[in-house]
Length: 72
Image (cartoon, rainbow, N blue to C red; front, side, top):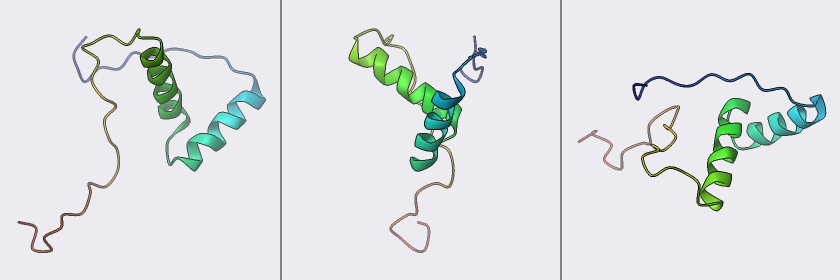
């Protein structure tokens, strides 16, 4: 699998669980999918089961503003 490929999985959730997850994701400015990945990675890390070669979740959205207004 190349680094740009993402594994797709079908996930069935109780509607109430999904609604709570979607609200939580919205509060943290993430999609529900990104929130699920964030939580799974955190759980794997807490259980010392996150593989060493796993790349960080790519940041989405606008890049941070530079401190120099000229862009240099």
